[in-house]
Length: 456
Image (cartoon, one colour):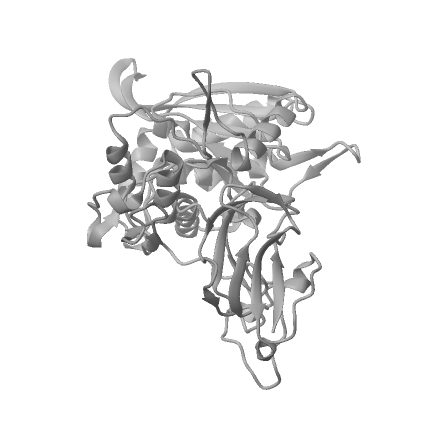
């Protein structure tokens, strides 16, 4: 028998700290190898951590809501000698994977076992893939939560035990709903469920909190002399730092153009009827994404970065197209790798998947790294345009405004047309007015007449 302390690992991208969102186990519980024990929130995503050994939980070393550094012990587990060799107490990822007795195998996809695509399973995710890449499966479903009217099937409800006095009641609720209830100080055991199969929805929690005025935040709030203070942490903290750095490092220039996108709207309607898009959600954003990848061929400097240390301009080999997504945890920018190489169908599937993962709060750091150009779809909020701030490490960002029917002059006659506004912010250190204007005009031209895409 021995006591093993599980240290908070770096789940990717060199993160240095994380917040303990919720424990999935309690003292006295028996855990098996790869059981999920805790959900943490890093600066970029929510991550569920598996335990790398089997035994009995003896102590939860960090309470929920506390932020700790990578390498900090967070849980103690009493293990039996037969369960495998003790886990070293170092902080490296290799220290988190135990060995098993000779002859014992681990289920495929688990820590130390076989993994899809010829990869090796590690603590969180998989190691390098040795086979050719395959696109993620398509997803479809209900209303949007992020940047786009893309839908996805809801994840399986998670059974949560209330910690209040009525905690003996089992309730069904998804992780974001449970976190909202925790932030509002509401016991899920007393909330009336209206979702399918008795699942408690976000609306159920919000309705239960009415009519009291509550400020919804990513972390518990503390009232001081009538004011409300919201701790800045996680995604919001990183976003704020990145925006300040970008705004005061890259000289921003913003150009605007108003476009008749009636032909794009007609194309979207036709694609919705196409059997190739039968399981996908199609929207004008898809056509804009394709237009960006095509226009970047003519103006490659738009897909570049400024390397201050080397005093060089880096032209990116692929368009890793970021889509700014507003989530309950804050603004994130996951990106679609090598978007220029995807067909319109594959690009649509990738967008659907990106939004589905973001609305579940499961976007991983790797999906947010390496972006080269960003689109922010402010139109879903009914906004016509804005002056977006460039995502750090990139050279430009495009804001997509609301698409509205407006009077427009066609052949000297005023007719109703679908109109939108595009706003391009670019780094004037490497993109001059000519290059920025050329790119923006090319994107607008494709949206005005999608057949022009054949010219690129």
